[in-house]
Length: 227
Image (cartoon, rainbow, N blue to C red):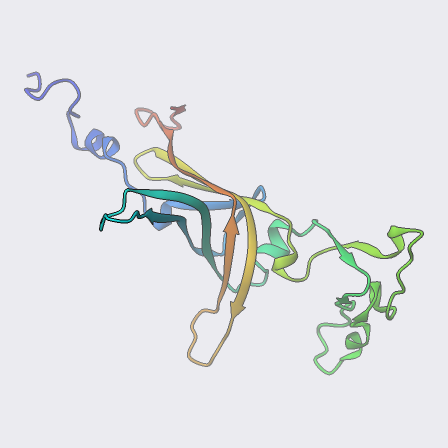
């Protein structure tokens, strides 16, 4: 018997669930700088823009609103596992240009020996812990060094791609472009079951959630049909 509500209304509960799509945190995965990350626990963002009322004499209400600069910022929260969310995974092979007068981290010695602090001798100004570097105006290569970042604020700008796919076969994505890390913080105590690492960031722009398509669930191993 045909539906009295028209052809656009789903005919069974499964199609109804696929028609009105929702996602939860367990359906979402994040890809940072092209690398999937597994320890990301939360990702948030906020968009703000300056808007000011325009007043003139003799009127108590504003005539209009002037639009100004826009700023996008957010936070990333990850679990402390055996690797850092940014430095040891997505940017393990990425370098930045550092001044030779900066304090570089020394080469770590035997990490299995907690009594060994000889690696602290390598922490000194100059590339590789060689002491204060003199500026050479004749060759800039002698004054700067390409080295792996040891703080998250030294990481070059990167993109975050968020993918959501639920059990009904629907998929969606959002993207955060030009992310720059501002702050990082963590802590641990006797009462902590898990240890969190929190970072705040700013970015250039955000692509809101868009539908990617759905899988054909009529047969095992159904094909994905993009929008």
